[in-house]
Image (cartoon, rainbow, N blue to C red):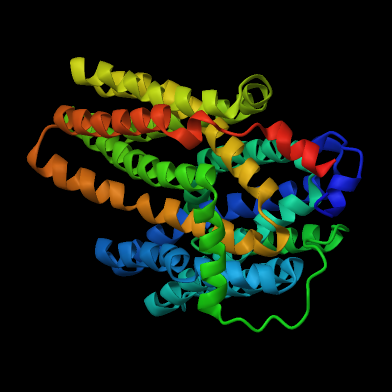
Length: 417
């Protein structure tokens, strides 16, 4: 028995779990608002300065906080009240985005203000995102954690499809609208959090005096000491690196074949649609397939890229990678759900911040590597090299001892009951 309140209750369907539904509704709206304002930052900087370099700097300011603050945010999530961390993160974002929206509406916005707001919003996202993992664990019984994270995968896939077009449309109506809408979405998220009844963490021992570095090391040591989760974390690093590179190959290949920006956008949207469909199908796969089968099958689905190496047409690349993209949400939901279920509550923030930091730091390095390769080689050759990387990961996944002995999620259910 792990003492978690959710595990002591008879599970009800997630759609009838009041607190989980509140959390998902609040995050669906706030994430759509965040994605809408994300493209608006770029459009606003370009309209204000005409400089692509400054537009890139605004994007960097919004994304770099994860690299800077994910690990300290994990410590904060384990030390302080997670619900109030999330509430205050939302409140700060309401004020920041609201101030930018008002400035844009009155014509007083400046480039330094955009950078500051982008950095503040990115920082608050890190704090909220890490604490949210513990919140899900608290409001969802262990038996349903993998399905809960499959639901989150579907939400994120849907958001990535709808958020950017919405942001562009709102910006076209008025420069201030995407930011004001985002501020309202964070206010709505605050309301859903305050309406939730379940505590977001177990009772904690008082008098935690260990330093920041010591606490971070404790989370790292726990993850590294679990062979299966350690292997999955490292496989995620390699997989995210290759996925990041693959997206750039798709865009560059389409551009070199003479397709318009609208067609390229449609191709990228198609990959997002495959991910959304895979998220919807993930709960069924989670019921039918054991973890080892999911991991090994997903790894070898990358062989679909062979089709593009044989016939280097960008539509063939999209079709060849569709099964891999479709099945990826199942992998994420299964591994993340298992990790969240077995990590002690007092270490949730630190262990998951370490795992996410590793995965997210690898993702932006993929486009850098792909860009260097594409500068010297064709998209076909670059894709062949990426395929080789995917095959190496597939071989490692297939023969690795901890993956061969992958645990059953039923073990977690039995331990929690």
